[in-house]
Amino acid sequence: MKKIFTLILVSYLLVSCGEKDTNNISEPVLTPSAIVSNEVMPTKIISSEAEILASQEYQKEVRNLEEKLITSYKQKLEERKKEYKNKNSPSFTKKFWNNSVTYFRPAFPLKTDRFEINVNGKIYTLPGEYWEKEKKDFLARLKTWDCLTKENREDIFKYNGKKYILPSSGDCGWVHEIYSIDNISPRGRYLIYSALWYEHTLTRIIDVVSGKRIAIYDWFGSEIDDIHWINNNEQMIYLYGQSELRITKRDNFPEFDVMANFNDAIVEMNIDEKFITLLKQADQQKSYEIVIYDRLSLQEKWRQKIPESTSKDLYDFGYKIYKEATWSSI
Image (cartoon, rainbow, N blue to C red; front, top):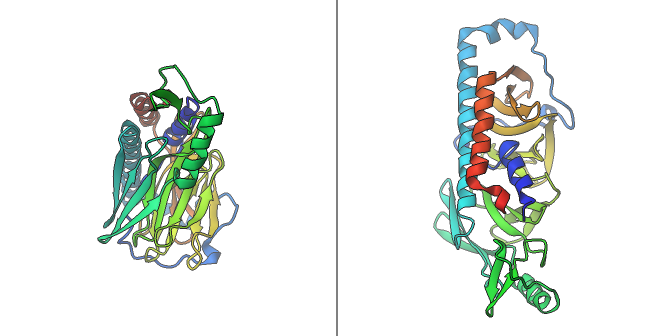
């Protein structure tokens, strides 16, 4: 599973899963005319705004947005490190608003995995990636495939006194291993999580009430990240595949419109009443830039490179987190 280093390092240094609480923001509706589909956002600031943007008050606001963005990015990396450190625990829990999600890992080959979701006191139990069908298939493969090993590998389990390779390793089966609970909608209707198998990753969206898998993103590098809920918590804004900003349709979740495409990787995004603020990473991952867009018009309002010393600190921090989490051992 060494190849998963690619996923996590990309996720940490280029993307990652973070949660922000925009639950209490009063949102005007984004109309289709405000959505720029498959186009790079404008980069020039209109001259009539030049004096406003150069004012001390605006500059102070920019600095505050930059500090907030960098802080939330570091918090996201720390959270991902924590997730990895707990990867061998039998269960883990994450809280979102008034809701919580607990994931119980499988115990191969007989015990399946599951989610227990608490939505305002009501408990929903949903299957994970290793359920009855997957268990039946895997037990059959153990009899026909050479999944036995004598090596002291990390990706093994013991069964009937013998060592077997995990089905998520790529050597013995194809069961995805859930590694992150990404989000649950504020009203508790939709669960979003990420899983991996060898070099392959996926993000699923599950209808909590029906238990149906209503969306899947399963191409390499196409995970969804930086999820925000707006417009009375009926729409989701998120980053897709590190460089595409999407918004779900108001009355047809999870169908979406593309708001913008970016040439560089977006490693962090914040949204408030006025702005969408992005932290972009470019120049072989060692240069960072802050870009600010007007929340309603989606017009770019500000763009500037983060000082070299700050960029270096960010890059070094990300690499330090990666080493501490020892993702390369997966």
